[in-house]
Image (cartoon, rainbow, N blue to C red; front, side, top):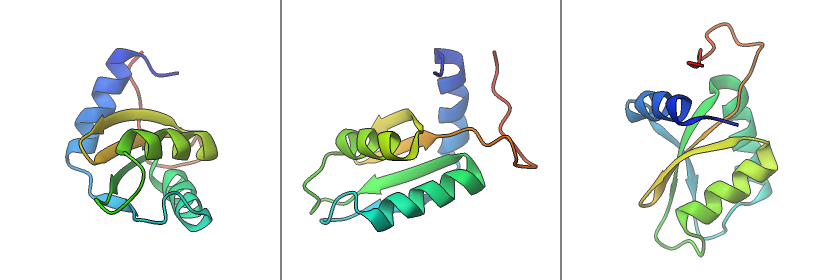
Length: 98
């Protein structure tokens, strides 16, 4: 579980990150979950967006993806969200403050 200092650090890193995960009117499908899982494995930190025609809010989509991918929610603002999952095998890992 992330503490507030770690969450703040990840929010700062997410500011410059591109939105790579987009959830449309189909919601969180198997394809979206697989894409999120592979992106978390490769990057550790993923920024996503929920389109207006989706039946889910950004918070609902973030919660559902986190439970599927075993990730931690970092931030939800408007239609965007950020999730994090540690990957110890990465060369360029994000080192969190304690």
